[in-house]
Image 1: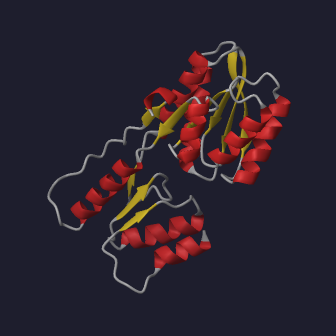
Image 2: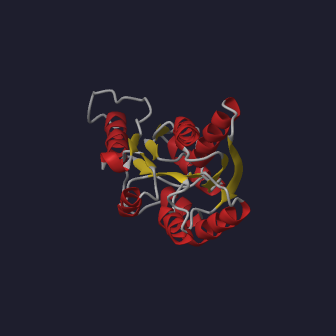
Length: 231
């Protein structure tokens, strides 16, 4: 965060605007708000470091969490516990987990959200955390990876021999998740449509600096639901 804040606060070249995908941190927040108060157009993409004076482009992460819970509760192959993995430093992860948890609260039944593991969004910690969850819940029926490190999660599921028994939902279509969908280890990918986010962020900056008169759409970017049948 310190290096990110330093890069935001100063540069050796003039900047007409900033498009940022940065973690939540007091240092980053202070740097962003200092520039925003000066009038520099700033757009957050994917995650938000500040709630003040800046624009945000991203999906409705609360809805994404509820959607993941809906799929697991309706598609799980058996009754039993469900776990989620996240890195709570990111506001978007907290929003997804809140949606996920509240869906299960609103729809109680034999498939229950039982445990939340913290992974730091790193492969090693993600693998260790999931391995622990598999030991804790030998009858696990559902898994929601809220953030990154899908490759580590997929590898653990593949090596455990339980990948096709657990309904697994995660984010972002990559080479790893595409292969996991085809193998039946992953069931649903919720993709944030990064191209649409980049275009929207650029449109907002261009509007703010006066290079276009077209008012950009401010509604959340629609996420894309991808399964093995829609690759």
